[in-house]
Image (cartoon, rainbow, N blue to C red; front, side, top):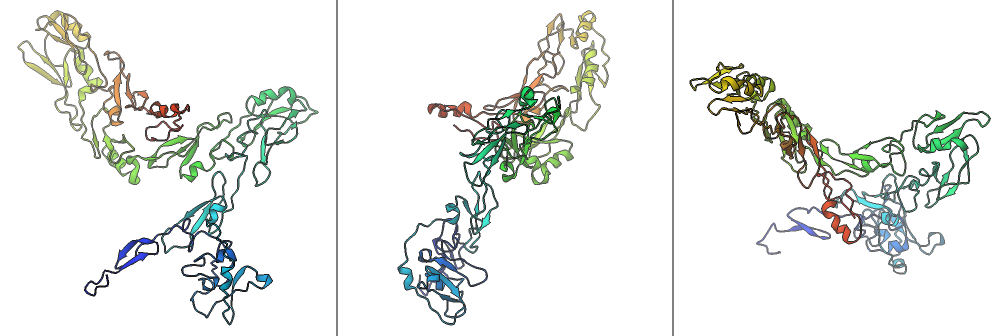
Length: 581
């Protein structure tokens, strides 16, 4: 408002409108790949050339006719910032002479003593060409590195996959497409390497559709144009080639005049020493080699590591991208979806905190922040999310302690389960007077009485307590079960629920998984397993499972309706939403 009583309410507004800022300049942005009116992604063929040397603009009339083609407020080359920086009739001058044959259709900045700016020529050469950025017209991708309005002329062109090349600032990049290694409609896609015998692919030129297959050494045949060549052996390999070809190799007869000197050789890009009369030991690291099934720059462009699960030339397409620490995740044949393992964040601060307390750090849910926890190391039990755990240690859990008491048919009791209180466990029993007797780290002094005078030995032999008043044998912890009337009881040991040296403890729960003991008989130990929580599947005996969740189990019906197949390239639970039809 212009009301004199209202001051300080002036605003700065970006040329395109919003945003605005009151009493200060607004933070304006312009994507030069989209906005082509001022300093957008154009070349001299489109508008003016903004030269660093101050005065050399040359452009076609049709481009000069675009409004503002030479910068903000410049409707002609004479007012362009590079031709006339001060926008005044002095200094660097502009001369337009469309009538001179050598300058037809051109505007040129020159150091002249007078100003001859013939704007009337612009109207007669105004064809209204379509506006598009220089990258798009070259079949490339335009990227504005900094969209701040104060950072002009920093757009660049990048090669569009599968072409490769170094990005160029302010101009189309120099891109290359090797049809032997790339994946495109006109590419070889392994046609030469997968031929029998394997052949060499060669991309004749930078154009498309001109790759050829060439016969390997030791064979003859015409070059195959966009298809495998028809190759034949003319020496010892005619009879022995099948030995090499079965391993994806070629047969080479070193000297046609010498018998028995044929050998198998690796086919590029596989490498390895040739072997006389037998297959060679070839390797193909698809992470570093260049081939139709190779990783190329897939992993490195995503700033991830590449690992080839098998370097055998017969195992193709098995490379994986691995996320860098502190993130976790991997994916076969494509960039991985990385998640953060908080135990390794901030230089591993959380992990170091757990280790300092003698505990281990685990992140049960890498997709959720704040899920890391410290877990006590067996035989101690306990865990704490986001903090050091208060660990407990029942010394009777240790087999060597429990066995001392069980051999005497007595119960083992640890009165203090603090991890700091050691060697205080006791064996307990009930004497003839009904009093509880205890002995630290040894069987208590209790004489058998009543029914137990004769049957107590059978109970003790089974590692159970004799109960005279019930005339039964009773299970001792960590085993459970009903009393055995007049005989040893049938005790069970659920290693998922109990505490013992062979038990699961918090191993499964700390990983967000459930524990199952396949056989709870007291004699069946270390057979518990961790099982993944639905919808993930998998299990592992004695350790956390590597969970997988094939999203096609649920999403598959979407594809099935269209009579298509569902594919989940990475069934890891952390890689959700990557299924496709």
